[in-house]
Amino acid sequence: MNLGKDNISSNPRCRILVAGVGGGACRVLDGILADWAEPPPMAAINTDDRALADSAIPLKLMIGRTIAKGMGAGGDAELGRLAASEDKDALRAMVTDYDLLILVASLGGGTGTGTAPVLAQIAREEGLLTLAYVTTPFAFEGTRRQEQAQEGMALLRQQADAVIGLPNERLHAMLPEGTPLSEAFAFVDRMMGAGIRGLWTLLARNNMLNLDFSDLQTLVENSGNECCFGYGAGAGTDRVEQALGELLEGAMLEKGRVIANSGAMLLCVAGGPDLALSELEKIHRRFQDAARPGARISMGAVVLEGWEGRLALTVLAAEHWMPPARSSGDITADDLFGAPRETAVPEGKGRRGRRAAQQSELSLVDDRGRFKDVAPTIHDGADLDIPTFMRRGIRIPT
Image (cartoon, rainbow, N blue to C red; front, side, top):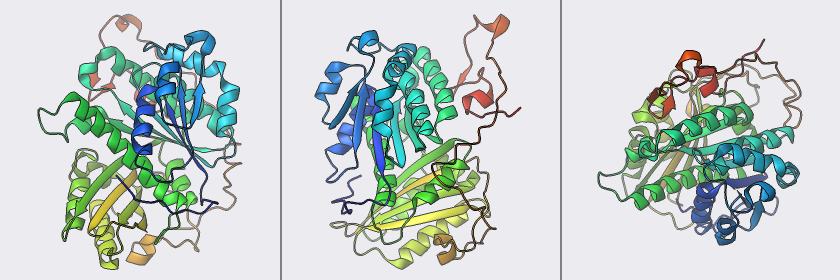
């Protein structure tokens, strides 16, 4: 997704750090960095010295020198966790003075799976809103990587404000049969890059129709720690229908099931100078029709140079939505295009103070007992033998 030249001021609306953890994530960021005229600050975090040296990402952090010795984690998530723990001070210094951390990781390997939860915890302690974009392994990558990915996902959901999972198996369904392996991985990287780029465009630029940092904060803090991402694009006279069809009927949002179940979503519309108000109204109406009654749709729109005749839609949707109250002074795209209003929001939800009250948690152990030597039950990339509350990172209060 090439969003053209990114004209932002020296004082961006939201201070964003994009951090890639592990080799797979750094490869994603290298790919979108080459196509990004004025990117946000980016960081590469790895245990592999050679991979870091080959990366074009300007800010690099080698972790776990005494443990991994610059050779990588060898697919061992515990080694990745120990490497991150060894360099917690350096990770903390990296995230200081930002509002939002976009954490990128490919789960299933060692460094990304082990380090991502540690980095998310540090960012949370420093008061950042933390959004994690992660991929999970293809089925052919083996049971061990899938199990390790699920364990890492559960830990990450306990620390990040929201985790956006892009299961490789779901993305694979969008590719023609016989697609070469290298092209399949490149497609996954492009989809993740589109999600990151669309979110950054909404928050950092001064757009035609803005979304604020508070819109994202409200979404993720009431999402049950889990969000879904979708992308659609179109060109020509029927660009709106093309983009809506790709987004609402594609595999990324399970052919519209995610939108139908979602209680709230952020929608970014990117187009050229010919982007019309009637097109925005049509897009918003289609999402209202596709979503469940009363769903909260926050829409932003950006006009980009050189995009005549083109349109791209990115959406961030919360399936497990716990609606907050809303202030009578808030005006969103729902108000512009006729969605029902909600009730008042309590005051005083500042970013830095929002983590002060921590709920206690039951100490529940994942003990398989007599079934410890039985092969796990894997369905759609998820280990069904892991309790649901652990897979989704749900904290159970005492």
